[in-house]
Image 1 (cartoon, rainbow, N blue to C red):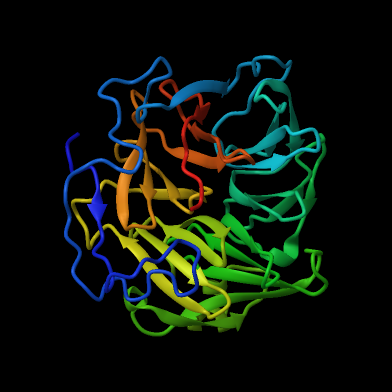
Image 2 (image 1 turned 135 degrees about the horizontal axis):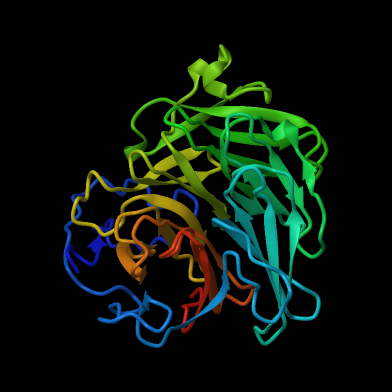
Length: 387
């Protein structure tokens, strides 16, 4: 490796804080952190890639689920180009579905792959068509996939993963360059990122939960330095245009290049690529914190932050767009480490990280592969469980 394998953040007064706790990592920057070299909780990456071109920790294996333009093995469905954001959905028979966006135009949309209870692929189909540049999105607690269009008039589309269909536009969630969305089932709100240099962090409050047809859209206003923890205020904005283009929206805060967004255990995690930061918002208290800032820790392995998901052990798995194509891990004991690396895919990006419902399999894609065709993978192994 050409740079250090991980960064360990200093502990706070000997206390132990877990991802997802209220006020998570409060005052994490109060004491200086000391970078050091070593392996993550799953051990070092293998020196050589496996047959699929992945460097993985010991005990983990991979397989290719689909390649863009090719029929998904075990089905008659050709996988879409430029696979991006995705999520898994449990099914009544013990199987699950992985829904995955296509970040292309003129026809982006979303495809699904169906697995049985043993992890065998049993089907694949298109669940959304006629949309453009579908980047990331997010799952809902009621089992639908919210697919986000990443263009200036982009919408959020609500899709049913288990059946082919067009999906339903949700214009109340805004018309802007959408990236990802996370649903807080406790506070009954949605949080959305915007992938532009002047992007905002939005929240949506349904007029009649859980319907997404009507409601109030707001953008975040932050006063002070979020590296020390601040409170967020929310400013109502129109869903007809990006907040930065509105008079009220000019009072709100820019989050440059908003990317992945995921809810877990009372916390909304999101990333911003232009400043290479990972953030945590606790909706119950309104507290916003920077968990990771690449500029502060130049020795750390994580660059080009993108899609994010959370494991059962409350570890953040963060995809890289570019850099050395790693998926990095941000753990509750304040380590940033590589979990895997895709070799031979220069110019690509990693996306769509999502765990199967039992937490034992991780799905993700290399969007442009080695030949401009995307590859969607499954990684299986001894993922840690919540203690």
